[in-house]
Length: 402
Image (cartoon, rainbow, N blue to C red; front, side, top):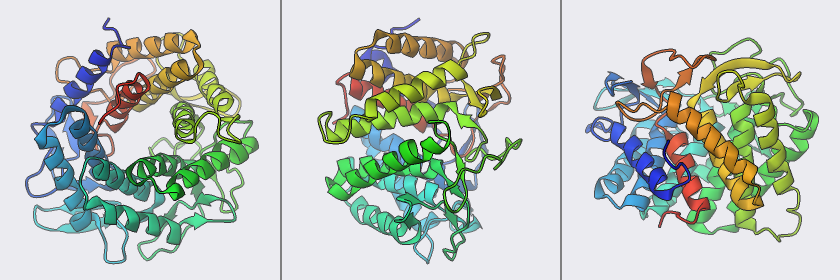
């Protein structure tokens, strides 16, 4: 096994994953291709999803800052231009899914998702940190969209989705707010505007504190319009990858990571932050206790309110977010047990998820670690989680990007 804690290993792994996409992902006519088989074959050249379009910008912005390859900076500008020309809509929003014929976009799904806007904000923030100054206006515009259409001051959280004409629906979810928290931290890094850091803190306090208190101290995914817990939303339906039922192992560890990153921005001695580390530990420790598959290894997708596994499949991003959280907890607390978890999760992923022949990670495995399909990277993936988690660990080890 490699030394998974080695900065050289982590940087090499990022480069190795980028290499899977590099020769084939960019569409000269605009944006990036979003659907890849295990060997890198593009199997859908026209469908473009907002989540992939934004995550490719993040991937290349971070790559430019770490490795300094001009192609990555060009890819950031290429991806940002596609967001502003193909996804952007006359009403100011961004289409969730489009068909791109090489010349113009046809909207397939014009729903306005706060989750999508969070990633538009994240993309612009990282583009700005990569030196793309024209991203500044897009960042401010996206913040205004989120505030005008989704922010609910009485709940101190964002609503979730709206029609193309901005009629907000009744569903409320934590996932959009979690990624909004992530995006706000990035926007703060890019601009140093206090609003973004305060909003990140507010979102973290609302979801991991007030809302978690309604669900046995853990983060439930789904809520009604008044932010009461909806225990039945999508129960038994595994088709909606953005709104799964159950406590999500990977979201508990992702929140643990975000909480520690928030504390890093606020400072460990900032007033009223004493709850952050204990809560991050609670989320991570519970995720390991209930989510680790003792028989086959790896972390399962989700478990129910009774603690029993409700989805035993293994998802790539769950492992990635969890090894990042383990590393940040190890560095922050000095507890070597978190490094043990880090090594255990990485070793499992190295054996079962990493494609050592073609590069990158498989997407989903069965509970017994068998591949489910040969679709390595459909829309939404882009390895933002695996490369992002590796960047997070490198930063925790003192090897952040420029």
